[in-house]
Amino acid sequence: FTGNTSSNSLAGFLIALSSSVTMVGNTASGNGIGISASSTLFSTFTGNAISANSSYGLYLNGSNSNTITGNSVYDNGGATTNNGIYVDVSDSNNITGNTIGDTSATTNNYAINIFNSTSDTNYLSNNILGGGSINNAGTGTIFGGQVNVSGNYVVQPAGTVELIANTNVTGNIGLAEGASRTLSVATRSTNIIGNDLTVSAGSAGSGAAAFAGGVLTLQG
Image (cartoon, rainbow, N blue to C red):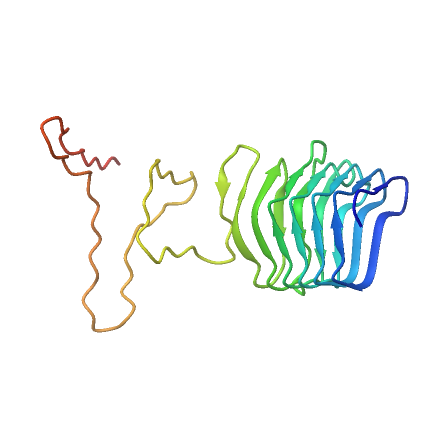
């Protein structure tokens, strides 16, 4: 399906019991559901404009291994609840690079709603969330980071974030207000001496015009 427009229907585009469908550059506006995919596998939804649908923008039900990327999804749902992309009993879908926003929902404003624990190993990355958030009730959801309404890159993992290799930070690291935070180095085995934790300021440069090293400040 390419370049079609649907409005004023129960579902703008309804796909069921299908495989390897491609939907590109379609417009779904003013329907109950913008795009509904039920029991749909290995399909691609890209570059679609989905807006002002009264229940859901893009609805996946029992649909696995689909690619949802580069879509514009705005103002889908009612005055209190927004569901931009809704994932129900659906596994291993790649939801990446979509722009999802809502300007009116007052209670549950979900850009992406992984609705239940029977939605497994869905991958979410590089989506721009304009005013909405991610509700994750799924199992094993994989997060690659999203851009929120303030333009900040937000990582929302199911567990901890592990930095395996050396990581260079060019800006500041801020810890949000709330509970106390701990910076520590774990020792994983018994009867092993603890690992060192080193915090250092930048060293001095070299050459005639080099500046002195930075100052390490610990402030309580």
